[in-house]
Image 1 (cartoon, rainbow, N blue to C red):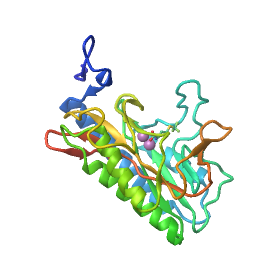
Image 2 (image 1 turned 90 degrees about the horizontal axis):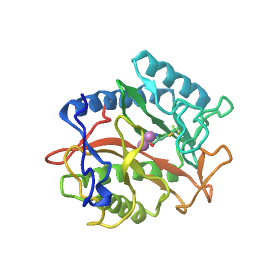
Image 3 (image 1 turned 60 degrees about the horizontal axis):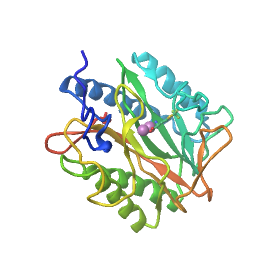
Length: 272
Ligand code: MF3
Ligand code: CO
Ligand code: CO
């Protein structure tokens, strides 16, 4: 039985509400399970992020660990809207790569690099989506600041979430802090509803204005995943149609959690 119900089914509804599901307690329990597994996968990978390792080796260990825990790697073969199937089991986004970096046996990490690992296991049909950016060996002062500010952006965005708050409040908090620190927010990639599907409504921009956008309600589940650039916000998608880089080739960092709106506030589902 599926206890999800569509928030607003038809006629007379605000279009922004269409298709957004509220999760039952039973489904939230499933999302907690897969969310914890996703967070534990990142925890498992973190010590492997060292100078000399390849992004393929990180990918392969993630794939092995995911399978060993009875889950499926959602990214592998994922092919939305006419895109070629994603060839990796995780995304490995190094330095100027904003997101959707493809693991490669030719890509060797070096001290001073930063790398985002974005993992999405599927457990019993539910997706848990989380990512972190790590530095490899010794970071430059700029790289360290960018990574620390980006994690704080995620924390500040999540802190806005409670029933009655609006989606714009999340982005506003992120944008205010990122720009105050001299960085910029990627506009072209957003957070998203997640559950039985990888990407659903609503979209969660990481910029915006307080008091605007859809009102949050208990039972909504979505990601917050700010991508913060050291330089300008512009991005470019490479010829492989996945790898997304900063137009100015300056550094970019990202952190992501899957969260649920509760009766009183927010629950982070992707904690170990
Ligand atoms: N995990 C990414 C997100 O946060 C999506 C990756 S799609 C893939 O939405 F195909 F590249 F894996
Ligand atoms: Co996501
Ligand atoms: Co992700």
